[in-house]
Image (tube, rainbow, N blue to C red; front, side, top):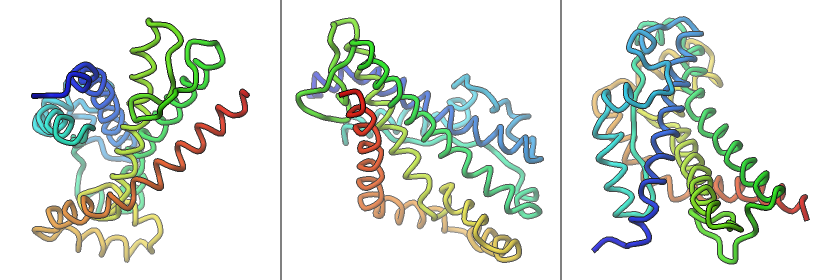
Length: 235
């Protein structure tokens, strides 16, 4: 049997996930277009409409998120924005900026969710919770504010999770491409070509999954400290 409380918040988890991944991929597509690659744009992915992203990756956008929620209690999945590999080879630094655009969108959503919760506390619809969790960073002061408090808490958590995970520097994650910003251009190009070898993406995902237990907690802790520092300024 599924947990009734988890079932109750599952729609909010999925809306937060859908918004987060759509913004992530749209940011990739928009950055690539601005930097000279219109591949994703021609595929219709410079958009905040989730449907083009869902159609491209239905497994990662629908099936896996729901499975991970009911197995682990939180959602993760994937989508993808196509790019021209020849453009990446010619402009590895531009490709690195394109890669960083996705996590940057996630951390922007973290800031928006955090500011919205702080604003809610300022106007009195949220208060400090008696017990903290990923779905309850603030406590609603009215019944109508309950869903919003839960959604913003989930949105905060989900985007820290997606942003931190994607910055792990292993293929096929964004962090591997972003390494091009700290390498000489010739070395960045050699690194990109090396990472394209068959099997590296699968190995990279295994490494990332193992590393995530060490990466996520400190990143989430810093995000929470910034949020609660902002809350304490209201006291």
